[in-house]
Length: 242
Figure 1: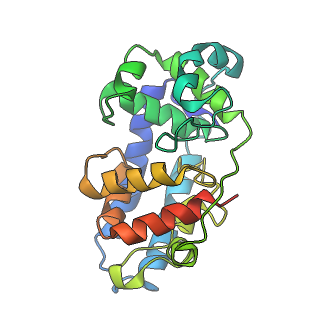
Figure 2: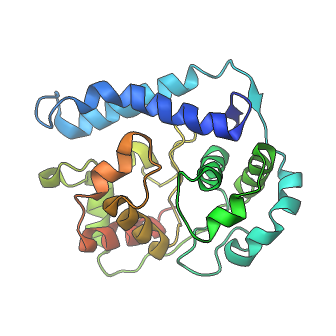
Figure 3: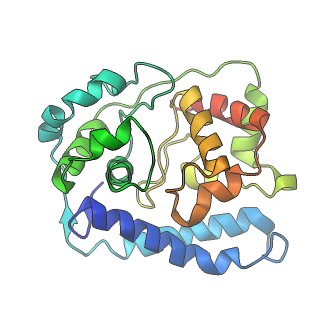
């Protein structure tokens, strides 16, 4: 995965712009007014976003260097492990995550678009190239295999694969894929094997609005309709995807 337009900061802005332009016309329709309801609307939006993303493929690409990123990411190992597996479940596994997504999050931490007391100072002095290199390093690692607990597993599967129609929540598979591998072309993150506690915490942050770096409020618009029970269930199911 490469970042377009020459820098991580520019790329983050482009991803947001693409999502906003693509989604604007669809969010003007109600749940029932769009043929096929929310599920088809979300699928169509995802397709348009991918097409807009791919249309930039001919532009200048900026590439991260995984070897340089290994040296630059030494301090990251204290929380995320030398193998990209977080040392505590409240932190995210980074191994195998899409390069573009990691770069966007680091850029957002650095530029104040994603608030976190631990990550903001870590990213504050990173250059665009540092971000690209670190992202390339973690992206090159084999993904972490997670394990889901039996409790509430079927409930989580139903939400992930089928959504919650009564709450107008589409399935997670439309953006993150049936096996949680995400969509690097659209900059949707891989989720499979991610720590349950981290996923649940991020969904709650989206729900409260404390995390607000999702393009066009894509995650916030869904998470604010999820209960704690539903969040815990889908987060547990995601941890076992591979």
